[in-house]
Image 1 (cartoon, rainbow over the protein chains, first blue to last red):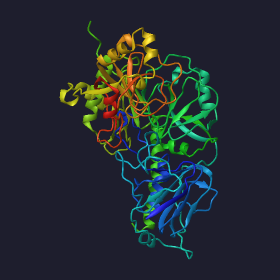
Image 2 (tube, rainbow over the protein chains, first blue to last red; image 1 turned 30 degrees about the vertical axis):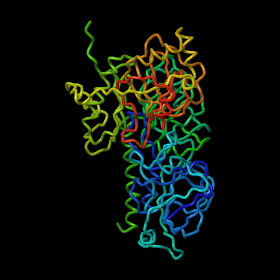
Image 3 (cartoon, helix red, strand yellow; image 1 turned 180 degrees about the vertical axis):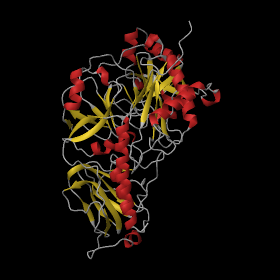
Image 4 (cartoon, chains in turn green, red; image 1 turned 60 degrees about the horizontal axis):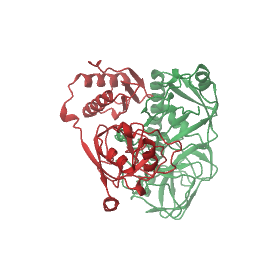
Length: 323
Length: 236
């Protein structure tokens, strides 16, 4: 079974939950920028949560399903008409062409049974800087033939109750898309927050920051006022984490995203809480965000809220599959 | 003169899924060696909620799943307690055997675009720059910036040059470079600001290998000068 790539889109890569255990040798965990949307896409086709799916970025690919394939698209909304957030039995020879995102920046196309690629270092995530993982270690290109495992798509889809036109009438929307902008993202004060002057400390929280065009899976650059440090001393390079907000000498903050560097020598003004990283990942260049201070207790509450919402949605999907 | 005992200076949450335990905010080779051993001890505990143990120049980071059922209470506190427990233990030598890794390097001009500039900066001839670099004993202080990208101490003060004013847009994979009192080996063709004085034919990071990174934190490293012919023979 195969999906053929007619046009690759802006940046379409295979991503799963990523790989832990190698940050000490400089390899970040990587994986899906929006793990919530990935988990829902997988559940919608009856896959395990960790299966790899196509991460679609801003401009969708054009694909051809060579065989009848059970798929689900979850995440950003597009101007094209492919059904979102529900399982779809795509007939053999049909096309996938979603166009441009209208809300959110990233979506996941999961196929029942998953893509037939070998894990590298324990994951099927594509790590673009290292040219490994996913499909041949790179983003999709015109002419690629993506191999699928045997999914028993028809049998899985047959379990679901359908309307007269053969589709399901329920859906499982992601809750990571921006409702309105600027989105609110919660942060802890970073280790070097106090080394910034009081103007910078204030404007970090007062500014509506704009995602700059030179943003990618490694990090988002934020456009706004330059943040100046009162203590100009260089800091000793130290470890970073997903969601660290670094400020290089030019004063422009960078939020570290899935493919971030594992260490860094720039001061960290803030650390984005884990529950809000996926929501930030749904902003495209030009999208806007402002930051609110929180503590570890609130970070835990936000994390638990996210987990509860996700597990409720996953239970609903599993119920429809009769599990 | 007896040193003060090494104690954590700061326990910093790196978000809600990691903690940084800092022992020094300036480069101190003795503290770094302690951090490497401590990281090995923490790693050997292999708690199910730990995802990564990352030794850095002046401290170590623990990445964890704060909602793992084995974390009772606050994950940051659990991480700090684990590190304190490991500090109390005598470093068991079998836990942190310092490996010595030999890295062949060709210092000939075609592999060493900056060696002449370095030679004139430090007032040595080119062959002497290569000889002094290859004679050194190095230690991996930290891996970061890119997978397998090791920062090593031990560069002879005679070769201390500042970073290049203009970084190279692309260095060759395996490029061996120096700046200040450290040396590095670039894993990929990436942009870099250090002076390139040689190149190893070995793959610095190979995702297809069981141990993908040629070097690990804490490793002892020696460079062995090779000819261009040997480079070609070793380069796959």
